[in-house]
Length: 594
Ligand code: AGP
Figure (spheres, rainbow, N blue to C red):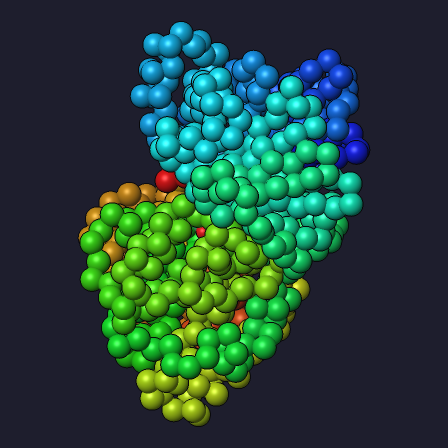
């Protein structure tokens, strides 16, 4: 959720920490702050709002020091404000934190009884005073090793100590923390994107581990205080991939680069993962696919395509519900989890539940060496580079493509003919160029956006494979424009939602060429007869509807093509409304809290 970054080395820490914060800002942008060990002790500058506000403040109040920590916030406890901004300092220690302390109130009450005073509403300050209280009694190692016994929740912390001005302590328990080093410095951050400009190697902290870095030495320990050896890994992503390449926004770049990224995701996978998933992968038992948000919507396409291909059904579950539902998972179940960030708390928890049940687990992830990638028995990387914009687009199409290829793999193992498998492989191989062709002329979408951006309510409807596309389209519009949008399978409209229809309620109908299109068109007529305004996305027009003409393609390939005008429409409408495109309000790229 939040982004934390730390540096100790020979250079001035401030520009390095600010660069790290800029790269982590997609994790939260409610407030930003920095703590630097200067000749006059630890100095803190923090304020409400974006990292650029912090940069401006530091321009007028420059700080210099060789060691520091910094934070960009997604508020959980205490509203976005300078008072609740990190870092916090108490006596000689300063802290930044990513995660949630679930038992913060009871720990706070104990500390209040011991005479401690609080300056903020945050769980983080509770963790800091708890740490100090333990440190006072047991010294540094004792404090670090006992803290996790006091605190419940998922977190990662970075501390600096005024008494040891070039020392950083980093603790991981549930939330991501990576450490990097180069010839004259040690870096720590919530994810590798913050390390990309500074080092090519990273150590991935596991839960219940901490590190102490000072003056070029870097040591790792487990929570019993025992020194442990860790191997660093060469970072596969490069700094160029995280640039805008001349686009006004990361979102537009990531939409327009989907044809290339689909090719990257498919590269070497037309053998249907023969190398990455050797042997038989088809379980005797159930196949479940579990995810959140846009990844969940990609899984819905998997459900429809797999069913068409094999006549069998798989269960698609929303991770935040799944984790509290008893499920008859056994050791002959296959559980597939999807996650762009690889750190989504609900999906991670669902994965650990599946592992405990003995199920065979497969993760389709984008973030390299993320927690979910490291937890799953098998993993398939999307290979599409970092996705920076909070609203997910290129990861969606890559997930659908990899799930379609996985469907072909399983279908082949359960007897679907080689000819049919090959037919679909050929069709999927044509998708990137069909997407590129569609994206070569998108003026019509801009025009439609100008007509619809002031609308207050939208339904997105579809049938068959058109329905999950409508679900993702509605999510994109909500995330980016903040306009109320709901998605329904069109057959559901007359069971209630149609009561909302009037001449001011817009409906976007996703109508690819499938066997349900004719009945979808009659559902559209029902809406038209109640003065509802319709925007039809199809290769076949309908009187009385606004129309975004789509290329004639096989209906089952529509998740890749029909999602493009929906992504772009949300982009252009959000732009016309002056919204922050890459960092929409109240959102974060990786949801690491429950
Ligand atoms: C999508 O645009 C959102 N950022 C959000 O719904 C996201 O898909 C969801 O949080 C799941 O993220 P993940 O794929 O990284 O697990």
